[in-house]
Length: 411
Image (cartoon, rainbow, N blue to C red):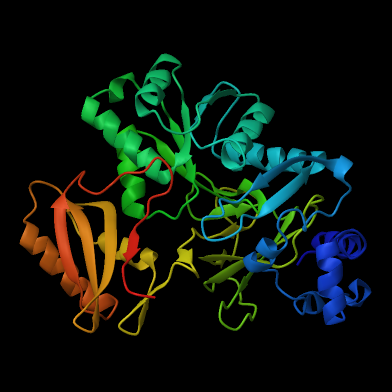
C-alpha cells in the first residue's frame, strides 16, 4: 500500500464511520474504531464486505450521502437473489467516466474513432458506462445497445465503426455472422473491447481472426462503479488497474489470508474515493493474481492477470473441484475444435456423471477428438468424463453472457 493510498483510506474510514449506516453498524458491532487503523497490517484486520451483506442492505442501505447528492442508481441483475442497488454521486459518475476514458486511451482509441456500444443500458452499468468514457475521450459513440444482429452489422458497415464494445459472447456471435456472410471486407473495425465474462485464449483468437481486430479485455463490476476499473494494454500481459482510486488485494478464498503478488486467489477491492456507496475490502469472488513488476508498455499502473474463474462457479464432481477456466485451458491444446463448450452434469445409477460437449470442424474425426478430450481430462484434472463432439454452430450463442454449466443433479 502506497502512502497516498493509505491517506485516502484514512479519509474513507472516517467518512463511512460518520455517514454510512451500513459501515457504522458493522464497525460498531465488531468494536472497530477508524482511528485505530494506523498501518497496512491494521487495515488487513478490517472485516471483509460480502455480496450477501449488500443484498441484505437492499434497496438503499449502502447509501452514504444525503438523497440530494445521489444523481443515479445502478443495479446488479439479481439473478441469484435480491439485486444490489448502488447509488452514485456526480463525483462518482465523473471518476467512473475518467476510468473508462483511460481504458479507451490505453487501447489506442482516439477522438477520430467511432465506437459501437452493444451492451445493455438502463440499470445495468455497461452501456452508459462505456458511453460516458467515449464522450469524455471525444470519440463518436454509436449507442446500439444489445441484440438485433442484422441492424448491428448494417450500422457497423454504414457508419464505418472502428471500435466494437461487447460481451465476449456477443463479439463471437458477430464474428461468426460476419464470416458466414462474407462481408469482412466491408467492416472497418480495428479494435474490440470485451468484458462482462471470463473468456479463454481460443475464444479470443476466434474473435480476433473473425473480425480482423486487436482485442482488449476490460474488467469491472456493478458494485465497484461498473466496467472500466482495469484493462489490458497492447502488450496483453495483464490488465492495468487504477490504483489511485482503488486498492486491490488478493486473498486465499478459504482462509481470508492476504497472498503475495504473483499468487492466485480472490480479488478484494476497496473504493478509496467513492462517495455514494463506498466499499471496504469487498470480496469480488473473482480469481486472479497481482502481476509483480512493471509492464513493458511503460504504464505506471499495476496489473492483475485475466480472471481465471470465480469462487462461486466451481463445480464439485466425484470429489474433485473443477473451474470452467481449466476446461478453457485444456481445450486450447486440441486442434480442430472451437472455443464453445457445454458442461452437463447429472446423476446416473447412483453416480455423478459429467459430459463435455464441444464443437468440432467438419474435417475433424469425431471419435478421435472425443477420445483425446477424455484422455486429457483424466490426465490433467483427474476424473473420467464423457465427451461429445458436435458440428460448429450447434451449441447456443448468446447476445449477453454464455451459460456453459448445466447441473441437473438433485440439490
